[in-house]
Length: 203
Image 1 (cartoon, rainbow, N blue to C red):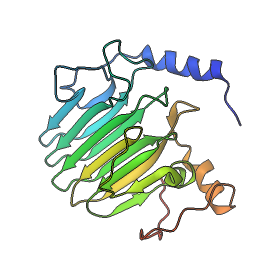
Image 2 (cartoon, rainbow, N blue to C red):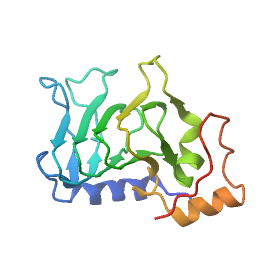
Image 3 (tube, helix red, strand yellow):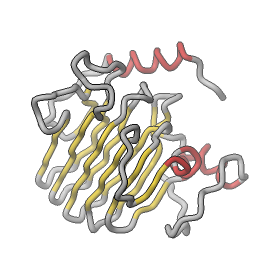
Image 4 (spheres, rainbow, N blue to C red):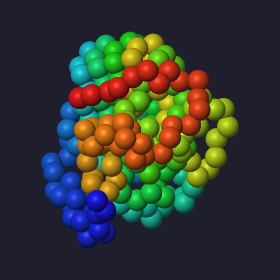
């Protein structure tokens, strides 16, 4: 089912109406803003606290932001599990996400219009929604970077899970629907990679 532009705008406006939280808070929705004077546009380095964040990218480019400059975000925790959703409504607004942990599980929701590279250590698993909508536009563990690409870096010896954030619905993937697509061949075939595909992620 397709979603019109007005529905997408409405979903985004509703998201903006939420109470955004300061970067020191480890849960909730946070609107990422361009900070040219800082190393990161968003930075959170927790100790043992669990992190569960929705990072909402702006729907416009800042006046003083170069057209080829990515929004940069860092999320780290020594021991607490990490959950990060990247919520994007403007596909040309590229981002750089760096997530680090000493071993706690990490789950990352990337926008369905993601195009770029993902560099990670450890073992990663992928949801059906990610395979259906994102996988074909990803280069894994590549040393080459293109200016137009999104970039994700995950450094952790623990479990890493990639899921899909649906830009059309403005929400995380519908796990049941995406799993059915995979089962009945309604989505694109996953490309041949060295990744172990023996998995079926469920919420």
